[in-house]
Image (tube, rainbow, N blue to C red):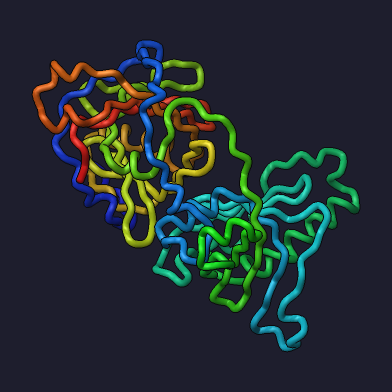
Length: 365
């Protein structure tokens, strides 16, 4: 009997996947992507990602990932001295926060820290954080034992250790600050508050991450969520096929979707589903977190494949490239398929793997 893996059940495992045909996985070198057509235009979701205090909840986290956030003020509602409730936070170099779907990354000069979190309940405090900061590898070198490094450590801990370490299960939520008008807010500094259930509010000022020229077609949430995506190629950083992701008779699919509170992606390989929250950030950067889930017993092969999908795709950062596949409409008999574009979606993970996905013949409604 297969082993039962006990984790929390999520709506991801209840996704309607649909019947799949047999798919043959091939190496990356076997794919020939045709040049994209300049006439092919995909409408961007720019209005959904515009900065204002009325950003829709499902798009809020994604919008936040498009900025670097400098900490400028700390407010403690529980402070006995009214004058000290709000304190400006000014350090050189500044303390910067980067937000991803499963973690907060902090940097100041050569110091790097992170705090992992997960979506655990509905707003206003949908996120919970661990009880400590984790120090990451840095590039301080000879500065490690100098007074400058000590000051940097002090700045980070002054801001975040009181927030994370003394509590088990601190909850927080992000709130955009500024104008309700997305148009008017374009000329104002982007402000963000991180408000906790312990009475502390951190205020940040945002600087947009620089946009770079990207390859392929524009990519939007609407396009990702419109289709079911089939994995047709998976290679490692040496361009060798990833065997567990390249089983000819076991297709692997991905489904992107949005509900009332968040954006998620689910991966399915024939038994259970695994997945997490996703954000499509600047320059076609895709961030994916990991949802907890309950996995029933499967065959050894299916369990191994699912574990490989999880370890490869969850809690990751990757670069997406979208290309159009020219099709001959005269050979297509299905009326709905004739009106659908065929795409190849290349996913280059920061860990070196390259996966290529093809959209399903029928759109998901």
